[in-house]
Amino acid sequence: MEFEKIYIASDHGGFHLKQQILEHFTEIVSEDFGTNNPETPVDYPDYAQKVSKSISEFQGNSCGILICKSGVGMSIASNKSRGIRALLCSGDTDIARFSRAHNDCNVICFGADFISYKQAMECLDIFLNTKFLGGRHQVRLDKLL
Image 1 (cartoon, rainbow, N blue to C red):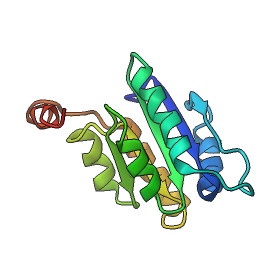
Image 2 (cartoon, rainbow, N blue to C red):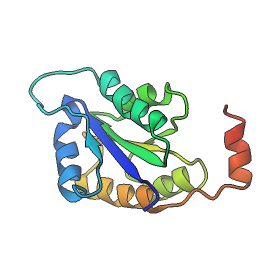
Image 3 (cartoon, rainbow, N blue to C red):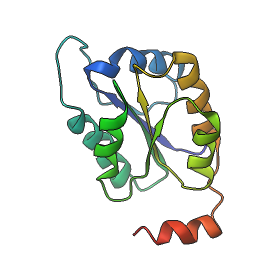
Image 4 (cartoon, rainbow, N blue to C red):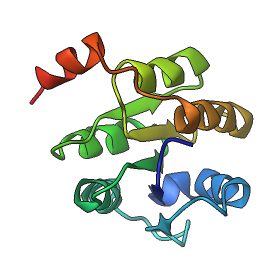
């Protein structure tokens, strides 16, 4: 695995998928920032910020998993943070692979209403185990700073 720490969070709309992911990856998730109640509406930017801040402050290689109903809100909110490259993954395993290999994405976002548990798990496995290729891809990333 490419990451030393993995952070996860969801809003109320992504709670159930987050819990399923946690059951599968319980040994490797470093911190669950919530929400812990699917019945109480919460604001996705608050949860995206917690994960993004933890990634930015950690001195090693870390990543985040963010889930809301569409995945769009989490990806927008997360990408606002410096050093965060968030992918909205709709289930395409090639996109999950290229997001790491070419773009060094460090956050994967899922829309719980638009992806199955099986698709999310396949993409997450690829995301967590794909290395950034560097080289010409690093040159491109450097232009984003």
